[in-house]
Image 1 (cartoon, rainbow, N blue to C red):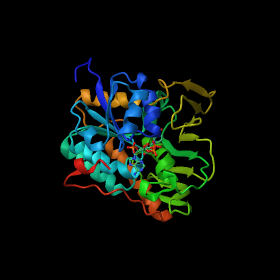
Image 2 (cartoon, helix red, strand yellow):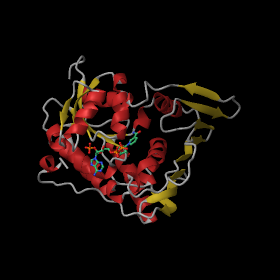
Image 3 (cartoon, rainbow, N blue to C red):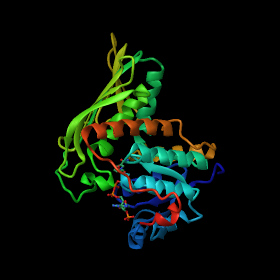
Image 4 (cartoon, helix red, strand yellow):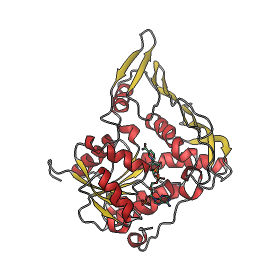
Amino acid sequence: MSEQRSLRWGVLGPGRIAANVAKDFGNVARGEIVAVGSRDLDRAAAFAAEHAPAARAHGSYAELLADDGVDAVYIATPHAQHARHASAAIAAGKAVLVEKSFTATYDAAELVVNAAREAGTFAMEAMWTRFQPAVVRLREVIADGAIGEVRAVTADLGVRRPYDPADRLFDLALGGGALLDLGVYVVSFAQMVLGHPRSVSALGSLAPSGVDAEAGLLVDFGHGRTATLQTSFRSPSPGNARIYGTDGWIDVPPRFHHPDRFVLHRAGHDPVTEVHPPRGAGYAHEFDEVADCIEGNRTESAVMSLADTLVVQRVLQDAADQLGVALRDEPVDPIDPLTKAHR
Ligand SMILES: NC(=O)c1ccc[n+]([C@@H]2O[C@H](COP(=O)([O-])OP(=O)(O)OC[C@H]3O[C@@H](n4cnc5c(N)ncnc54)[C@H](OP(=O)(O)O)[C@@H]3O)[C@@H](O)[C@H]2O)c1
């Protein structure tokens, strides 16, 4: 890709998040939406007309993946469909940016990661938090030793969602549950600063459909380092995160998963607030990361690595197992994923 050329994106699954992202695409430095693929041609056409009038509308995902004018595919379907759709896109030679949670189960995440690595194709989880300027700066501050050695993280993310079996968030077949929708943010945030966890202990409750409705997680990062995390569909919560070090702590005020600031507290010093707002709504940064990686011939992001994605999925899987949630993904057809991917 030359310096002037913008990455040509196809949107797969033009639903709620895809619309929010598309509205924000003017803030992407080197990328444009050139195609939209839906299971329904009219939906693809309506999405294109509203958000990217020059984009080609495709009435199946298979047609989108066969579009030679698409370099990279933004997978924005429900979690349990990600493995199927990402695998098909990788088989079609497309780079993939896969919405969080990367997949429903750990095994499916590993399958997608292996497929991307074997094909030498770029893949990344769309964990937009890691690319927010405030979070990028926060990591620098920690690396510079501002709070000493990081010992612990606390974080919460909760929303009150009345039970509705028709909503994907309560449907096991679509990867429903608070863990995969919101818990992924608290786990990924803790993993970002504490590294590779050893184990998780989870307590919580289930919704009538069998998805998790709320959970408290205590994650062991070894040598006494811990993360205490909370997520819920039953109760709203502010969305705070706090990172504790041996010389102080950092508060990330609500909502920590797309913050514009953090507050550094050090013993003997006044608190220091640093403000680093995102461009637009904050989705553009992760799309620029994909363009930068592809331009630099890198098949993985160092900021949101596939190794980190797998570690996070392991925690989510183990927590779901302990809660009694039978996570599952739509099966991936290893023989002909492309033509089967139109469902
Ligand atoms: N980064 C963020 O801030 C953020 C925010 C919200 C959601 N997300 C993530 O983005 C993904 C999509 O979430 P969403 O709220 O946008 O979902 P959604 O609107 O319910 O669904 C997205 C689209 O997926 C397609 N789809 C494919 N198979 C489907 C199936 N079996 N059932 C239902 N829809 C299916 C549909 O498009 P067509 O039928 O037109 O093809 C649908 O419009 C999730 O993984 C979610 O966690 C991220």
